[in-house]
Image 1 (cartoon, helix red, strand yellow):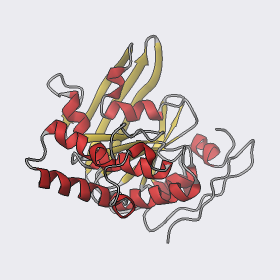
Image 2 (cartoon, helix red, strand yellow):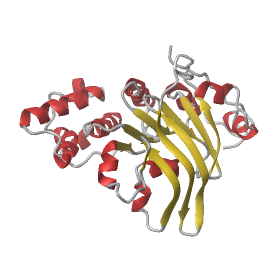
Image 3 (cartoon, helix red, strand yellow):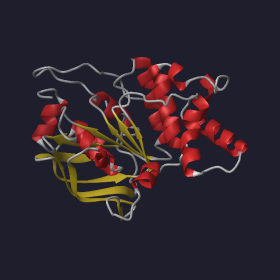
Image 4 (cartoon, one colour):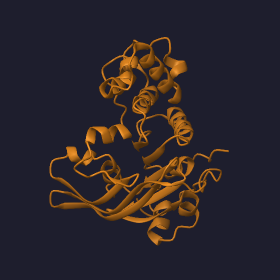
Length: 281
């Protein structure tokens, strides 16, 4: 059974009651897909991450939690080198994808971002048709050789994103005409279409209503059987519902990480306990 919903915001010392989905929270042991060691990030003279070391398992969901400005989104962007696009950003340390350093000069960031897809906080469909939104990456990377192959890829991707049944009869209408939740699933379909190994999600539900949020969470649970997923979320209830591993960040440092059930019911660090019970954040 899925975890009980409780997305109420905590203030002061009011406790936050989180019900962990125990069917998924611990989960089986998975091979390591991403291995980060001693990652430091600077924006100019300001240091945003301090010596972060974290293992991210494959075919599982890892949730990054912590208060605003704690570094969780900065760490997420290190995985597919999105920080390369920020002037003055410097990344030190090592982040391996299947044992290969993503910051190696021999790594093409464009190819890396095909392997490591990104879903942002606000749905960002291209100003194109639904079909062309999904087909875009496949065209760029030459993944199909015929119109029929491309059509099949678009259909498969939309089905994986749980959107095909809602848009099959309007593929040539603008993607921007979909609802917010549908747009976010369209963006996920676009990411899936280039056959990524990892999907990064930066607060993918923060702009959505509860019904759309529930659909995205169901989708995440389905996709984790095929992909390594890393999600940044401000909702601890969401982290408890969708993830198998949770990492808690505070003031640019990784405080602790472990199976979601353990982090939420028996954290080792008092700062984690204080955060999940609403004493700060």
